[in-house]
Length: 423
Ligand code: EPU
Image (cartoon, rainbow, N blue to C red; front, top):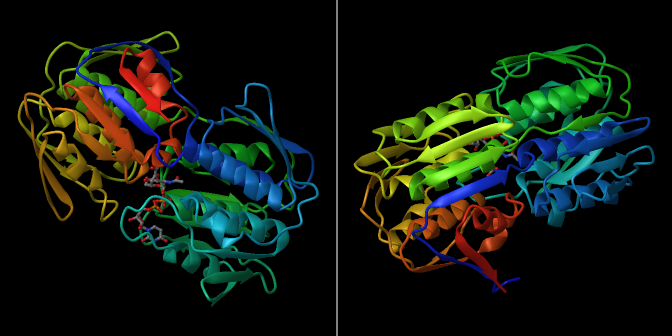
């Protein structure tokens, strides 16, 4: 709802347990891959309840798939046996970045596809030139007409070796989708190494594909002729987990996280420890304890996996607003991912932004104010800002947050935050 907002009365320590949702950025490519299944149905377990998941299901249905959820709402069944569509309307493409993956999946299924440029969070320029360059090299003809990309495979796909100019997550996934069914061997060099790509490889292989190397920078796809139904459970959402951990590091307290893969967040755990948090594994999860004011960490530079994730930069910036000392954030993945800094300054933070660098001088405290989310992770940073600040913070623009967090208000509420949605 347009006027709803999140209201937070901050300055409380966080205590309690939270179960981390399934990963958005794994569920979306996995659901898209279901379109390529020639026989039987796919069941994707661990899907988070999110608007981006609903939009992906809507695109699948418009393409002729039968989709349903089980009672929990977390297991999606997708049957693509009668899929017929070749086109995703611009209105649907616009809703999220991962819609670009339908280009590879529809081409694989139908031999032709019409899509437009994808939407998604505004984080600076987000071109798809690497996707398009690789697709052309692999035998796809692409003609652009009024913003619509008409893609076709004139004769056959041409499996070969493609080197990505930068290790793009989306381009790596799109090539995997396009080439899983093909006649020959495709090698992706300088591939993205994110764990979500390992998930996509594992799902496709469960469907009968022959892909290896995901998680490293060389992925080898031996094309197969058809894919069948499979059941797959997506990995835990590493950015959602880090959001709760950054919140507890900022506010103090002790939280337990269930459904978490500590290997996926190794670099961020090291930063949290440098900030003064104690993190220990426990059965089925991990516990983070923070008994002191966070200590600043000199420099945090975002990098491709396994480096510090750009998606965690905003929530860690919130935590550093009350750290003892100064932290410099260097954003090296996106060219405009600091919009949250100006909003945090409205709460009394001291952040200077200069191009791709933000200097955060830690303050003793923040005070509540009216602020706005401009993108998904920046929105999560606003929530943490509200939890830190004395008094009431109102956060508008919450549809951005709902794209990636199942229920951030419930989760921080369960951890003892005084937080609610006002409709
Ligand atoms: N890039 C190009 N050309 C391309 C593709 C990418 O120049 O053809 C550039 C981008 O502009 C950006 C960089 O390469 O500067 C990285 O982009 P990448 O393609 O790796 O990102 P993405 O696939 O668009 C995914 C996640 C993002 C996450 C990034 C980086 C999904 C649906 N999205 O985006 O997640 O930030 O990888 O890890 O998987 C989020 O969840 O909030 C989010 C933004």
